[in-house]
Image 1 (cartoon, rainbow, N blue to C red):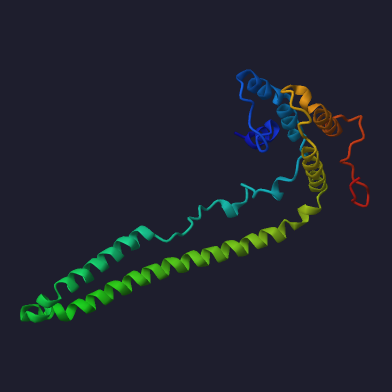
Image 2: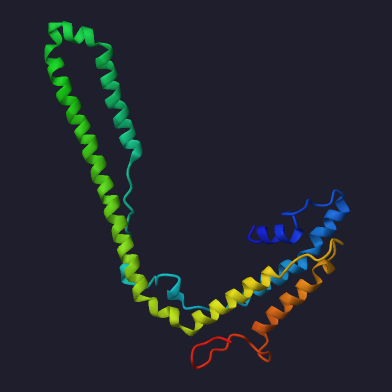
Length: 221
């Protein structure tokens, strides 16, 4: 599944369907095998980048404590709201009996007070959890900005510049890969195969003119 979109593009399924005959379909599947391998090999030529530029250090004592992300327990508030609504429904359904019968006088007076207390308790708990979530989100945003500023110097690292150069070259190379024929054979990608081989050679052969050289001024060429 890692090469799903690559295979879809190489088979040309975005513009046309597969051949209707089984033998032709199998040939078309086989025709992209070498191209998939070349694309994977080209991806393996990626230069190394500083680990701290993309990931937080697991050795940092700041991350030793497990911070539980606060969440709003909607299920709990949903059940409480249903119970609150059910009480109101039962009171409204039996309104005539409760208001006209003197024996339910105390219940009639206490019911609004109890319902207001229940509503206030539900609202207070929901507001408290919502405040905790908002405060935690704000803390995470501020801490993330601090980490970006602390590690901003890594963007000037030589390996980062090499990676950016390689990535743009890799992306441009993949844009030039295309099927130039529909013979359902490996020769359909004759030019594209040469392009990928040249890309791999540029970043693996130490005797070739490698593009990952950085001048003293820090400009790639």
